[in-house]
Image (cartoon, rainbow, N blue to C red):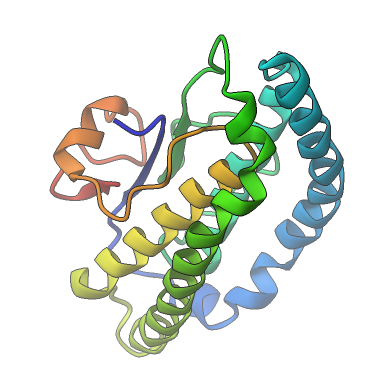
Length: 214
């Protein structure tokens, strides 16, 4: 099982047409926050790389900081790409009540120094596939935008590829940030992922058929 799990509650009916139409402008404050957050993460990932190469360990403070950024970025990306209408929080905390969730396992006791040292080369196939997935995400999100603006509904047939592409992007980013040594799976059974999330909280349906985790 991959150490990073993605979940997004399906919101098919009664979508907000107004905030969907202006989604780019609505999301701008979060993108500004992520921009400054990301500048700091650039340096903390470099620091983590040196720590992993020389000690085989991911410093706990860096791991928490970088994981928080990835959780925040995942929620903002999901909101921008219409997986939810709920405004994301302005931080990287867990927020189990939010419809889009990223579960990141704890840091390992020891990492492979070689895998960390040569990560830039190992990333090549991941980046290629992620590029394709993000193209899919953009195309499907645009189609969903048009449909939601006119009908107020998100078809399940559009939601699924959106979720799959967003999930792969989150896991590929986790791999890029050295948070995991496992290659992001192209596909993982939603039934396998669903038990990893507490679905009793608000915003997450109880049935895995309506909150498809990847």
